[in-house]
Image (cartoon, rainbow, N blue to C red; front, side):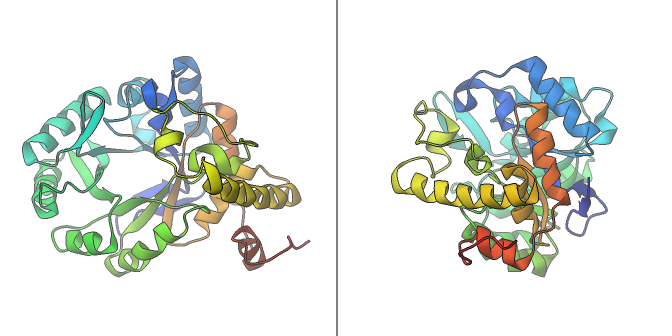
Length: 312
């Protein structure tokens, strides 16, 4: 597995990362097979995937990862987040310093570790200045509880503001073939301040793997129904066309569609790691193969719909 430097830090993360959201089960992704989840995590680590990302809001994900990684903590760069709090069926923003401290302590306990490699603000909180939240993260970094500070779901302007407070190792934003514009705005800001971009939603909930031939009927609370905006109506038809191009190129290269979608995200040097979710060892190994694919300019143009035919 190839690795890439995480911004200007001394940390190198696997080009393909493992996202922990599906392991959490619950309403977002349905019930999780714990034994299968453990095998998926162990297969990822064995394949050289050292970057694992989770969050307190992801159901039981932190608890399970703490259990799975016991005795293997030194092998991984562990990332989690703060700033979202469950309030019944709602999710609230809360980046008050006291909430950050509580969430960090809870994450450390659940993950069975005494430090977090990359601690990230999950979303901006409209009620709390970003500067206040960052100053608390700096204090926790000075205390040795976190090693590096990251942001998620931030604009280029917010990223630039954050860099005036502290060194920002990375920003984690949605970025995929279906949403390429979501990376563009922050790329130049990342380069300017020396931060890495971590892409999530690389497969858009699985649709770019070619999994869905017809418009699926998900539960209302399913993450693919409310989070990814490509499973209904015209958006689904557009996504299906993109997935067909991915499949065409994958067949020519003799790899999985998932690997091609991952390789597209990694074609940008600003991206340090492309996060992918997986429920089985087979899925994470298919995703991991994307790190070894070098797409040509013609391949990229075809995938993005700028070239009519897939070159031989």
